Image (cartoon, rainbow, N blue to C red; front, side, top):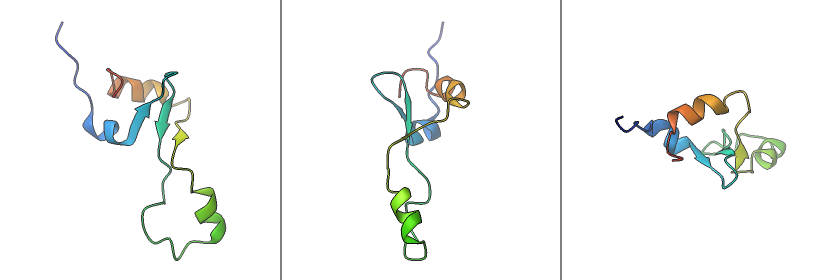
Length: 67
């Protein structure tokens, strides 16, 4: 059976933890932070969040070899 291809866009956005959870980076943290409120800046500070369990199966299909 041939090797499966990793989706490169998904590999840049998601990563697996040691316990097979899918890690992601929160959105809205790259630029234009001066126009956001302090609450938005503070709650978005977490760089490592976990993907929702409803989309994990699709992400695992895009990353067959664990990124």
